[in-house]
Length: 252
Image 1 (cartoon, rainbow, N blue to C red):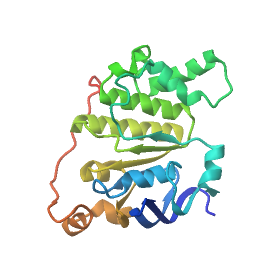
Image 2: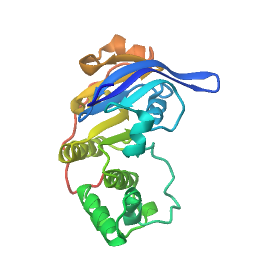
Image 3: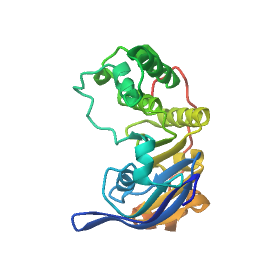
Image 4: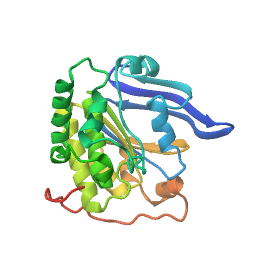
């Protein structure tokens, strides 16, 4: 077993008799920013759910030298599922949502609130601590969920398509925030994304799946038209776009 890596070997996940992902093997260095790319239905969410222990699988997953199940017994994983309407009628404040990430610690309510505010400040949401989570925009909710993940004190944060619905400027701000907290807390970040342009600009490592592993590492950051078509289909082509500078006064 290898320490310092997330090791996946011959990973296969089935839903009834349908194969969602097949024989994926990859080794990801901990402490880096990794991005999973691929089309809808290609298996990105399934792969993430297998890593965080939400679906049964065939094959092997090891984190920092430990079998995934043993790792999860000792260490939390900061996990952000795909954004939906789950907070529309959620009867909690922003601060209470972040406090949820502290429930496995044996600490007083006062200490728990102190930590929650600390992590809200990291994502620049402390001023909205007493607002209902359902009143926030989608981008603001994502920041709150990142604060909750930070509150677990996990060293591994996994996000499933967190950029959905964000405009280019907001995406830039989001990536800049992720890079900042990654360095501050020495995190391993894994994000799934559709956006080839933003992905290659910010990620330290990219790998692509469409049920199977396609190119990864530096090869994925230099994708050309034939490789894009292999991943996304023959009707897809690359379109160059440029990143807009972020402005702190705007909310994600």
